[in-house]
Image (cartoon, rainbow, N blue to C red; front, side, top):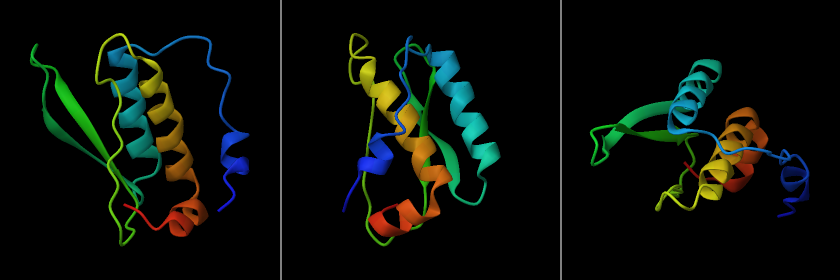
Length: 100
């Protein structure tokens, strides 16, 4: 598989999103692509904040991608921000990869 077309579209992010901004982005993605994106609560943080999980696609294989394992590693969140949108927007990419 050639992923160059996906990599070429990665934005030149200048700032990291806050948790509230990530939550809002997740809600908007699910609203924009209701046939491809499902959002559910996977648990709560130590502070009681809902941990959102995004399910994208219906491929026969499963993959789990996660971000923010540590508060000082925000680039994972931006990676998921881009990847989730790229997968939601591009059915051909979802079909080619074959993952949910």
